[in-house]
Length: 120
Image (tube, rainbow, N blue to C red; front, side, top):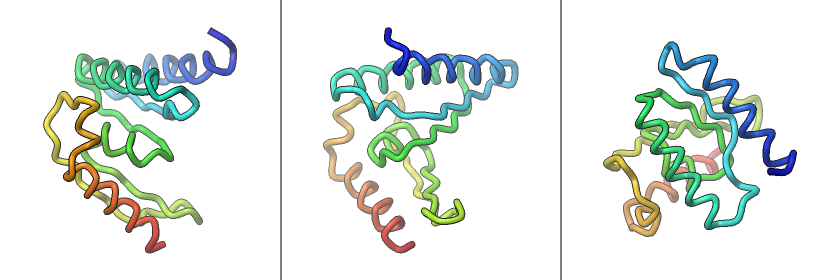
């Protein structure tokens, strides 16, 4: 693995290790720099790990699709001053499969997040 790709995984490992005793895992990055197939595989693997650990996870991303795929709640931040613009509730069953992103219900949530972003 080359250094630019290794850094986010190493950083996440340190953060998760620091929080495992409280069963909380903070993820600070998305997989945006990867090709679509690798990103999809890692998304599913991350969901499996979080479920196995029964961890509460904070996933910080600029990717709306990833946010909705992972989250039970998407906290939409403003671009200025880091204020909360709104919370979008995601009620899909777990485990989630990549095909979920093709459903009208998923895309309705994407539109809701986009609308919240556009309002601020």
